[in-house]
Image (cartoon, rainbow, N blue to C red; front, side, top):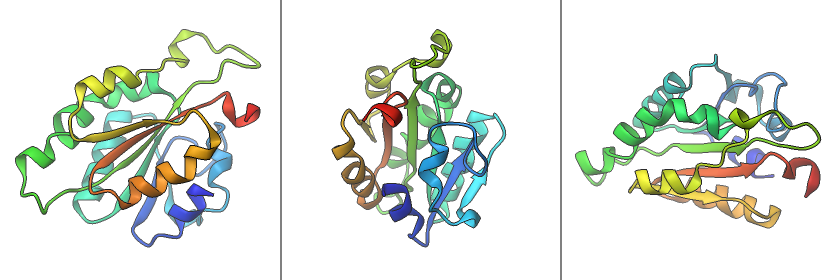
Amino acid sequence: RAMTWLGEKENAFFLGQAVGCPGTGMTTTLKSVPSNKLWEMPVAEDMQLGMSIGMALNGKVPISIFPRWNFFLLATNQLVNHLDKIPLMASPSYTPKVIIRVGIGSERPLHPQHQHIGDYTDAFKLMTTNINIIRLDEPEQIFDAYSTAYESTKSSIIIEWGDYYSEK
């Protein structure tokens, strides 16, 4: 429901791996989003977040999807040194916004090993000062988190549990 709602927004676009084609549990949440709003990306996380920041600087609201925290680590430079610092370096009226969707990798029914299941929520809260960071622990939180992120003037990281797609 949240992705469909965001997909109806004229300025919202989705980018990431398995956005325009199947590949992760997150893919199925995008089935009602118009295909012209789904931008399939190569495995280049730093570039993906850099592109997202560029889109936001041009008035778009990118929903940048990283299926696993472990891979989002590769975009930490863009997050910590650029997106988080823009409000400190620019005019207060110049606040580009990116909604970052990150997954904690599922462990069931098959454990993918430890490089796929990290939860770095607390670490990223310590590294950023101008980013809303919300971990979704219950399905009832989903729509409110994404609608609040869209309405906010700040960028947001919204964290989802991969195991919950089949369990909750």
